[in-house]
Amino acid sequence: MAVEQQVIIVTGAGGGMGKAIIQEQLAKGNIVVGLDLSVASLSDLAQDALQCFEVNVLQEEHVNEVFKQVFAKYGRIDGLVNALGIAQAATPIEQVSMDEWNRLMDVNVKSLFITTKAVVPYMKERQKGSIVTIASISAVRPRPGLQAYIASKGAAESFTRGLAIELAPFQLRVNTIHPGPADTQMLSQFTAQGADIEQTKQSVFVQSVPLGRLVDPSDIAGAVSYLLSDAASMVTGTTLHVDGGRGL
Image (cartoon, rainbow, N blue to C red; front, side, top):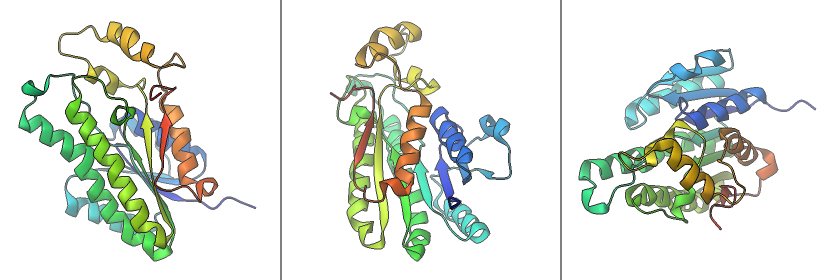
């Protein structure tokens, strides 16, 4: 029996994890819609099954219009992957500005509210859907100087759990993934200003992972595929650690 083609929306599509998630979903034969401020990094993936929108997901009206277009074109939205996120350079709290705090909360938390609010009506209509949010192992295994980032990822996890119980009667599943230190461009953004990025990467981040290597974006893409699939049909409100043991 042929596997039914799904329609998956991915935010943060232009980032390392976002691109890996999109590649995996395309390889599975799904239709993928990528959203980001810039989708230039996806140019090498150009194919009929991939549709990209350059959109600021903090602009609710624009997001609503994109989701409306996607549903009108395909008649369904099966999955939403919230892979968008920004980092915080390790900074003592007394040096963190309100602008930086607000930006982290907007991108890492407010965006989840906007995209999820937009997609839920379409999923409720079909009584089926899966929402996956990429958070961070730092929410449960903190590192000094990342207090605002950690707060935003803790909020993302709590938001997911709240939605899971709310949406369960409609057969919608909502889950979180906590990646450990990942081998993406974003990793360097966590280092303190003036620190040696490569040295910190090896001496701090790699050393913090019991399995001895950084998380590869493909590791996250595989976990996302599981949570989107029918193999996870009884999995909701959970947090899957893909962290090489960092959270232990």
